[in-house]
Amino acid sequence: MRIDIITLFPEMFEGPFSESIIKRAVKKGVVGIDIHQLRKWTTDKHSTVDDRPYGGGPGMVMKIDVAYRALKQIAKIEKKNKDVCIILPTPKGKRFNQKLATKLAKKKHLVFICPHYEGYDHRIESLVDEKISIGDYILTGGELPAAVIVDSVVRLIPGAIKPESLKEETFSKENYIEYEQYTRPEIFEANVRGKKIKKRVPKVLLSGNHALIAKWRGKMSK
Image 1: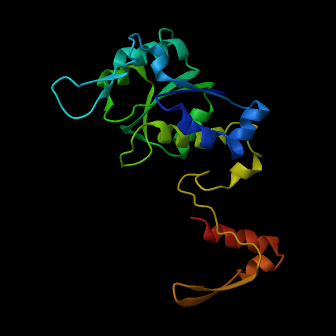
Image 2 (image 1 turned 135 degrees about the horizontal axis):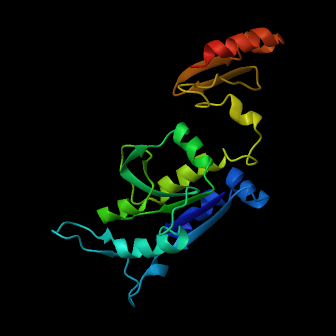
Image 3 (image 1 turned 90 degrees about the horizontal axis):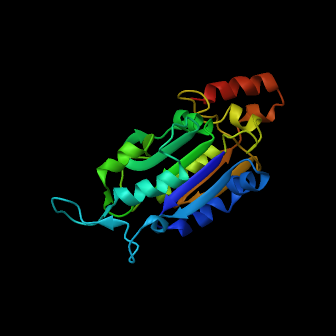
């Protein structure tokens, strides 16, 4: 898969994409990720990417002409291509979930355009394939939602992680929450906010009886 992200703040992606699964997936050639500075597609000496909104109001709004030039070059939007999916992170979009992540993981090319500050010219929505929200709250821009979506999608691309790790994880099936897991020590004791607690590993997990363990895990899954 190829992923392109168009943003005013490329540095925001350095941390999330330089560690863990995404870093390994890039190194293995499973995915290629490129971050682009939106100002590259401006035409004036001030590299203007936003402007005051018609009708007045607070803040500045991302300009459609700059967004169009960026998407024209990166996503080739003047041509039909089912393998490319252009994504606009926005509170007005559909709620992101595992089903949508799985759908996006089957694409060959994802392109994100990230608004910032007050918002974007509404006509930009006509240039994209998906409008996606990661929750009912406001962030300063589309960079963090884009990073969240990329993290969720990349791990589903074949070769990114071991296939068996995806089989019984949370949301691998509709409304499925994975069972509780434990590791050593068998008994854990501590003082937490003035209260003494003592927590044991469930005895069934110590039994060695795989049938009983599987049954217990089935009951504990939601």
